[in-house]
Length: 113
Image 1: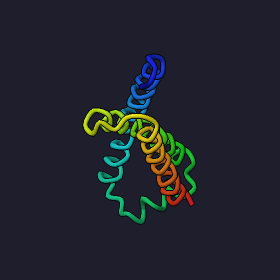
Image 2 (image 1 turned 180 degrees about the vertical axis):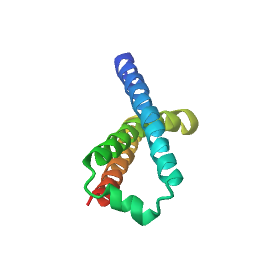
Image 3 (image 1 turned 30 degrees about the horizontal axis):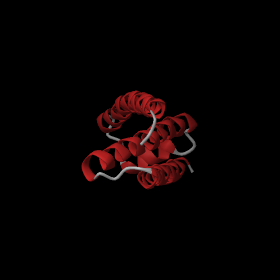
Image 4 (image 1 turned 135 degrees about the horizontal axis):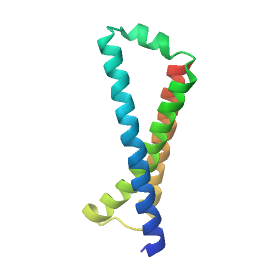
């Protein structure tokens, strides 16, 4: 069982990452609306993302917030729904968060390069 301090820290990081993700979702939707209303094709969108470091940074922050948020939620779901608690559940959730981070950063790099 995790301590009350650890639970409080996880609660904080879950909420902080949710705030960052909410702001990023709004920004992402604004980008989508801009692209669709402008009639941009997929090739034109990719052409604009090449070398656009501010856009790459925005999406890197977005995915890192997801990589923090998701494992905390998965560990909670595993504990509540499956009864899977303890170190193995935490490690599995953390590995999944790492997978999200690696795959996401590769996707951002693919858009940037």
